[in-house]
Image: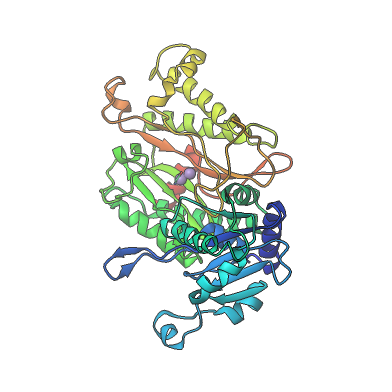
Length: 440
Ligand code: GLY
Ligand code: MN
Ligand code: MN
C-alpha cells in the first residue's frame, strides 16, 4: 500500500497545468538537522517535495518546467558513491532515479550550478517556496544574479517570482483514494496505540511509560515515527495544551489526556483520548467529559460538503457554552456568552485543522477573507476540549485541574463524512467497561 509512480506523475502534471507558460518551479528537499554535535534528528523529507517525487533522500532538488521539449521533470540528487554508501546506506543516484521515479531527467546535485542556469534562463517566472529556507533563497537569488550578469549576451533572467505554496497546497488539500487509504491505515495504527496505552494505565505509572507503550505499538505496526511529539498529560498537566515533558507520575483520581498519532508512509493521524487513570470517572470529570463528547458529536455532524469551515467550530462552541452554563461554570445566557467569547477561558483553541502529510496540514482556511466551504476529499481533525485551569479561582475547587479533549480525524465525503479514527473507546461507558475488563 503506497502511492504509485502514476499518482506522483499526475500530481506533477496537475501542478504544471496551473503554472504560467514559460515558467519553472523549484523545490528543495528538506535539510538534515543537527540535534547536538554529531547526532542528527531522524531525517524526514519535506512533504511538498515528497508529494511530487516520492523521493526520500536529502540533498535533492526538483525542477518542473512545463512545456520543455527535452523533459519537464528534472531531478538533482546525490550521485552513487560506494564509499559513502558503506557508511550511510543506499543512494539511488541519477541514472536509477529516472526509471525508479518515472521522471524525465536526473543529474548529480554536485553539477547543479552549471545545469540549472540553462533551465532557468529565458523563463519569465520562477515558482518556489520563498522565505522558508534561507540557504535555498540565497541559492535561487545567486542563480538569477549569474544569469543577469550574462544577460547582455544571452537570454534574459526571470522577472517574476511567485510563491509556489498556494498552487501546490490546494492540490494537497484534496486527498485521493490512495491517500485516504494511507490515512486510514495511520489512524488504525494509532488506534491500537491508544488502546494499548489505556490498557496499561494505572495510578503510579509515569506519563512516559504510557508514551513508550504508544510508540512501541506504532512501530510494531509499521509506523517509523509519530507524526508529532506525543502529549501524555495526567491531572493538571491535561490543562497545558502543548504539554510534552510527559514525565510526571499518574496519580489516583487523575484524568489522563493522550494526544498522539503515528505517521504512516508520510501521512499523519492525530488522535486524542482522555480517560480516568483508575478506570472510573468522578462525577465532575464525567460531567465535563459528556459536554466535550457532545460538542465533538455536534461538530462532526457539521462536517458536510458545502458547509463553511467554521460550522463545526461554531457547533462545538454552542454545546460547550450551554454545558458550562448548566454546570454553573459560567453565568449568563448562552447566546450572549458566545458573543462575549466567555467559553475561551475553558476552550481556547479552534475545533480542528487540516490533516494530511503534515499534522497541521497545508491549505487555506479562508478564500477572499471568507471561511471556505468543505469539499469531498478534505480531512480535518475535530478536537473540542474543556480545560479548567488549576488556578482558576472563579470556579469551585472541585472543577479545577480537569482537562478533557477528544480528537478524531474526519474525511469529508460526497454525502457527509467518514471518521477515520475509529475503534478506540470514546463514550464514558465504553472507556469504563474497556478499562474494567482489562483489570478483571
Ligand atoms: N496534536 C496536535 C494537535 O492536536 O493539533
Ligand atoms: Mn492532536
Ligand atoms: Mn489536532
